[in-house]
Image (cartoon, rainbow, N blue to C red; front, side, top):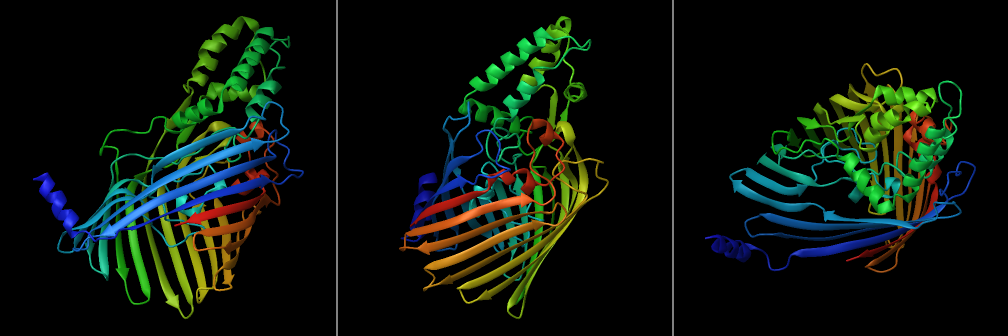
Length: 499
């Protein structure tokens, strides 16, 4: 029976599916400057992203689609003792892959590894909370690779004017991040070794030299230096996935969206019971007190310290990780007003994870709203402006990389000429609350139908807060994300091979 179904489906399919692919290596050369003083910070990176896809539609209107993704990253540090080793990592997986077919009447089923978009903003999204994000390469990640497809089933009921979309996500998912020793990780290059070096001189409670402590720290430094990049990345993946609920359906998520589409107006309301894509963390208070105190255990207490603190810390024991559920309710819409498209969205979340000093975090309700404007002149000119406001209810007194209220602005301009073969692109963002910004200019040439060349730059930084200089400053940092990673200024050159 199964073979007959396959043959019948094959006979209904069109004769020529759409296939294609893109391969995009990008060279990023770090810009030296006063703020680029981290060990190994001045580096050359090669970030390669590739995707191959195929899609087709059957005669009855069913769709199937497949996408394979590949990325490879190489880092070539310069002038850093102990950090001169070339480092690289690669990843393969599925892009959007699945089936979209009729179940009967106005009911369709979309199932597979999917990306479900909520909201209308591209640069400063508020409501786009369904899919986890890939932040391992930071601003070097192209837009189409930032959201991670996840197993999902969506039932769509309705017509071109009104429809309901119910999505079921059976497995818990999380953002992908590197935790240490990379350009875009929370713990930057050399910080761990520098911190261990600084605490080696701590004295015991009596003010005496703690020989046992110095020996222990020397051993930890040696273990850290001998930890290879591939093992370190494996440990990062394990820590990122710690305590993620694994039971099918019981720990799943559900989301509902209603859409109204009129001639020049789109409106939608949505809500769901989801799970945070970032973990809520709590470091053992005894560890926090020890880090703050700056006093080494005495030689008599060093064995107990190793058993009660060091070994559990190496195994992740003192760090409690949870993935809180969050209820979300939101709305979005867009309208064409003369030559300008107006877009807007808003969302309330019951439990937003916010970072606190010394590895702690908590959850608070958050309300966000955003507005976007687009102006098009044919296919050669596009101007986009967006603004976003985020408000935290009852936030903790001190936070890391967050504020009770944040106002952010972003924009993009693209102008093409010579029959769209040459283009100039300028993107930028400014966080009014943190007084920090980002500028990313690009000049590109479509040399042939399959080859595109791009020369650009990434410039980012804060007006008020310099980037953290080490691990202790990072754990108590009061600036924003653009200031935090402002040492990643770079000149870029990309080659896109397009089929």
